[in-house]
Image (tube, rainbow, N blue to C red):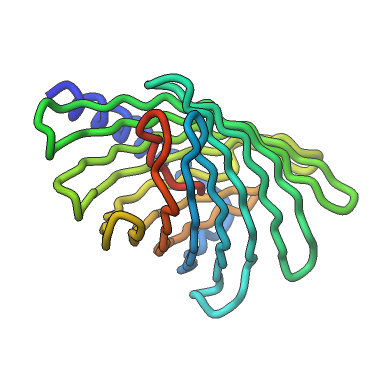
Length: 235
């Protein structure tokens, strides 16, 4: 099937990059178990879909608060296969507060002839700036997601992404992540997403690895949008 081949090629390329990036490092590699817990509320208004999310991220084997943030996204759905998505994230860390404006261009393709069985492939290119007290960093990320609509209750998915950072202290690939997940739709307004991502990061000299469970409750106030929106996870 065409969609399966496309998803396989995307996944193979990113996982190969993932593995190669972890080789030939002179530093001691470290592993950490993290945890992302999020609660998102979304609503559709014709050509727009808006959402707000409160998310908490734990690190150090889920024993310490790494950060929490509030994020707002507005997706413009004028076209069937394209979305433009400006966003803003306010992040609270133990030692600082960061503002992160961003802008995404999203390509989404839906395949499948059967009404109850559809495939969605999402490609996202996103620019973001991280702004705090005395610093301004920016970067570009590419992510790909594959979603399979089994029925009105279950949507398994795959996802992978890479982030390239420009800053005074570090310029290069900062992290790569890839994983699997499952979305369960409780009813027309409530759904729960559970995913597990493997990550590799290198902020400049020290390579580390992460295992990241992601649990997200999504509340859809309404679905009054022009086209089916892209389904993806904000890393």
